[in-house]
Length: 89
Image (cartoon, rainbow, N blue to C red; front, side):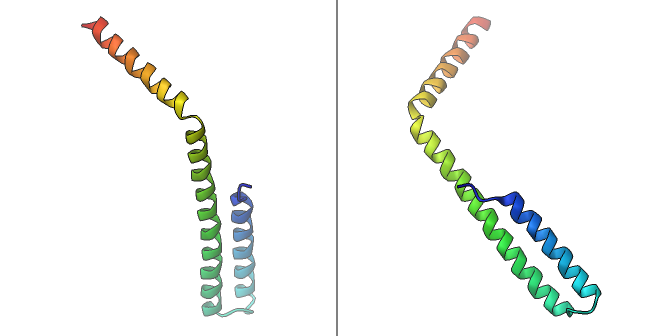
């Protein structure tokens, strides 16, 4: 299942807004805010890596399942390009 990067980013920004609010109210020190922001960034970074891995695995599976079609398509493109070169000269 595709990792929900949009929802993770939305949650990240909501948590940052909450941190800012708590900091403005004096509930957190700047050091605590820095630590929490670092933790949130790591969490979002992990979700981004999961999304990238999912996309790459999907592409890899698609390419391996359709290798013959891709090879045929590349062959047709090469032949058409060679034909165009010979007819224009």
